[in-house]
Image 1 (cartoon, rainbow, N blue to C red):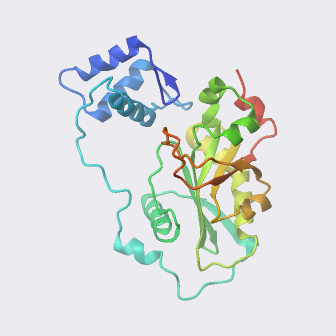
Image 2: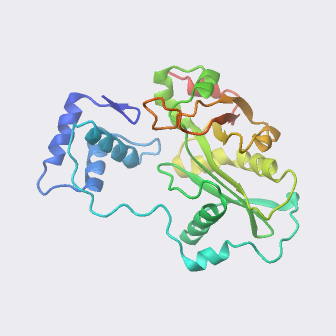
Image 3: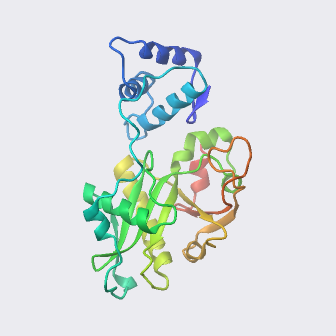
Length: 285
């Protein structure tokens, strides 16, 4: 049985069932930590892979293999508006000129910055804000202290034919090394900003620091970036200008389409190698 790229043996499934029958009973958070510790399921930096474990346990329950305890709290809303933050992301009364030579790339740091980033995306990005599970980095692009753009990077797509054919890896290699690809999940130029080459300039600056930032937080270096550009809403001009590679289009199935209904928008697939020998890393072993 395979969940979240990890095979589970019958003995491991029995171990999970035994933990579910422990006294006193474990809640879901305690259970995922216990499972990770007992199975040695850890990230490259040594931390427990709790998020992947929780997803795996939920899928085991859906498949009828286990029965989880009820959640302690109701599922939180994906976005909670805060008036003082909402006022901060409104269009300003005056917009300064954008000097590309003064662009700064600032990772999201403390909690207020995180709330501010979420609010900008919720109000001004056509997809809105959705929490990203697992490893991730978010950035502000600023000029003279003023926010002009925002980006986020997180987990890559489990599989997509254009990318996987471009890499040339096997299923086993993909399952083992998928974490070395990270996805540009959100990219927003604020709607009142008008500046030629801003998007490609921001992509170029981020691509030069992203591997170092990722290593500092998660103790490994990604080797390839990917993104999906919804058609016909966008054509990927800024990615092309920033030397990303267009690989083809998705089939519109989405992550959860097991019935091949093709209900999602078609998206173009773009990638950007962070190292020249990315295939060696992705196809290793």
